[in-house]
Image (cartoon, rainbow, N blue to C red; front, side, top):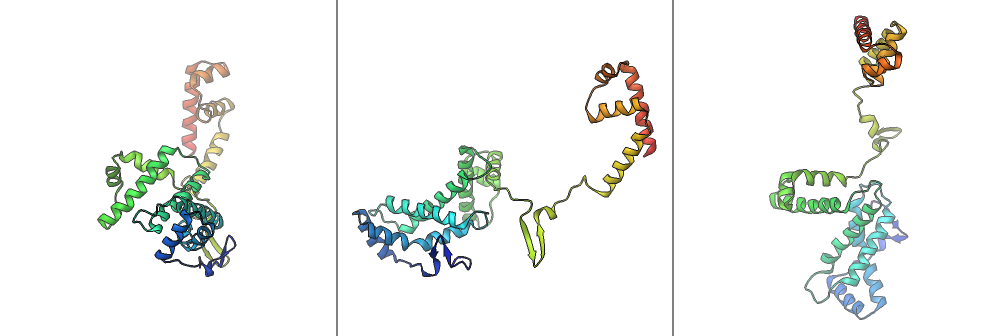
Length: 257
């Protein structure tokens, strides 16, 4: 059963059959001769394989029924394309075919579009990471992955980061009855502190004590990003006068702090 779910896409997962390698080969030989009943039996006999692969993608916020259907498409493609003359197990051929179909679906339905070249590099990097992990018995570094692929470290790192699916700020990370913790609860805004809030109040109070012209110069200079020359042209005084007024205003603000 899949995560205690009895049905997926209307299929009772507790009743799924499992075929032996001999049974699969016999059915495949019949399929190659155009036997549609054998094809249907082969599909039904491999749904548990699809189910196990779909489970690998359970961490993504995708509808499992949709992924299961996509996985079944990959299964059917592998049945139609499998070469019975090769000494290869059907599952060995079908698994990457099903995974590839699911990955294409996730890629094409991702809200953030990533170029094909970057996606291809990212998937090659994931494959290289798995190979290196088996060889070294540890998680490989980005440098090692890049060397295996013959690519630059930065391009590999950027590609792998590009295919990471964004998560919602309101996704639950912990739930204890009525007490739920969301991603946004674990984020900190360094600008939104008590000290920053107090400084903001003090700055507003200091600005209120400036003269109208000084206040206008400070607002245009530091909030609107205008130059002293632009301010001088706008209010009709010289740049030297703007400079003196700005300096005087800043001194008064510092004194208030």
